[in-house]
Amino acid sequence: MIPLLDLSGLTRRYAGLVAVDGVDMQVMAGGVHAVIGPNGAGKTTLFNLVSGLVPPSAGRIRFVGQDVTGLAADRRAALGLARTFQNIRVFAAMTVLENVLTGLHARLAVGLPGVVLRLPRFRAEERRAVARARAALDLVGLADKAGQRAQALSYGDQRRLEIARAMAPEPPLVLLDEPAAGMNPAETEALATLVRRLSEFGATVLLVEHDMGFVMDISDTVTVLNFGKRIYEGTPQAVRQEPAVIEAYLGHKVAARLAAGAKAGVRGAG
Amino acid sequence: MLAQQLVNGVLLGATYALFALGFTLMFGVLRVINLTYGFYFSAGALLALWMARQGASIWLALPLASLGAGCIAVVLDWMLLTRLRRVQAPELSSLMVTLGGVLALYSALTSWLGPDIRRLPPGIVSADAFLVGDVRVTAAQILILGATALLVGALLLLMRGTRLGLAIRAMAEKPDAAQLMGIDTGQAAALVSFISGCLAGAGGVLIGLNFNAIHPYMGEAMMLRGFVVIIVGGLGDIRGALLAGLALGVIEVMTAGYVSSGLKEAVAFLILVAVLWTRPSGLFGRAVLRRA
Image 1: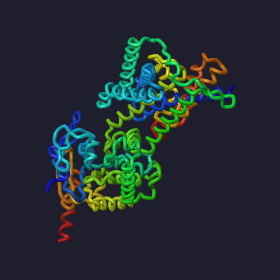
Image 2: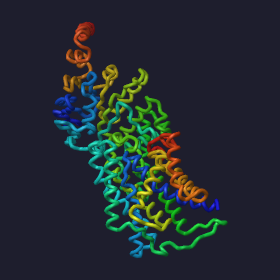
Image 3: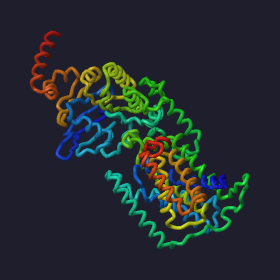
């Protein structure tokens, strides 16, 4: 089976720093794939490389079997690679519905003359776009706020709006950049349910996240980065017990203590 | 007398607003104070003049000159600014590049055509005038008002009611996020240049009609007014540019009528200074393309 997203030797150097260092990673279709790592591990740079905001210094990116390494961000989005941002990037001055419609921009096929003359074909397409945008808002639970200005939404709702905007074109892959950042425990739990639903809707989810509880709850596969390198990949259970990961996160002492605790846990379960 | 001045002021203000709309759109979306903008105004007027001398009617010359100015704007923006945008050069570099570019263009145009003031062929617009009460309105003035209203209406419809407008507004607010929505920002930038150039070109033809005086540097004088209007209206603010343009026209005509025509520019720029003292981001506040 061809991976949905295939990174090979992906590298990004900044002056005096290798933010992402020869990362190989495959994201298979279906499910939730998380990328974790301590601060400065290169997670956000990895996302910016995949979505095309930053060009790689070396390595290749393949998406649905096609080499997209040289494609601009808008072309990748048009191929079905959607993303949200760590710091929210909704269009504050637009309504909630208009925000979601921008996500459908690349999927509208009628050219300028059709738009200007408001040909029937264009109007039918516009009706379909609005219907899809409303379905996406429904998915995230914002249907009743479609007419509000995005800036009037709460923080948690703005995140949901970003997810709806990314999901509207029904992309095969959606990248969520720290979706739980700044959320309270109740909001985080609701978000976990939502992310699971995205994958039920047919989108593969690739996410970067700090909140370990959140990641462990919803992910099928976890890739761990440290200092720009991939140090481990496996199921959440395996990651939890991997000494290299625990050490990267917590340093030697805590790692040793946790390892003792994990053994006790395994013994108890057995 | 007052009613007549008011009508003349609104007419003049409408063309100022039309001119400033393109300027503020360009700034709001492309984040560049593009000083070549005044050149599109001159180019529109000169193109219309040339076409009129070939026997074209104003109904043909106005739209064609406007479209021609739009094309010139796309080419100049591409030549002068694409590279700077790609390397994300500081704003001051774009300002200086467009300043250098526009001075070169004006002097080349002047050495080619000469600095003389030209007149449109007589009869290009009917010389009829209508009396409404005791206010005299010329056919040219009706044409100016109609064309301005049409163009402003079309712009608002485009920005508010179409997906292209949505893409332009998205790009004005957050260019990186817009690109990730699949919006081709290079194409949208070209479209914005084209629309702005068309508005400037149409403004040039209409001002040429209003004063019946066309010369290569006419865009230069207009740019000063353009600055007043877009700064007072709020940079990137479409509604602000409309209101500030109308206000500037009325104030100029009133000053010329009741005080002294030599003082009309002094008054306009005093207003600019006063507004910026009290409201540094313009009369209507926000410096973004929010009120499309």
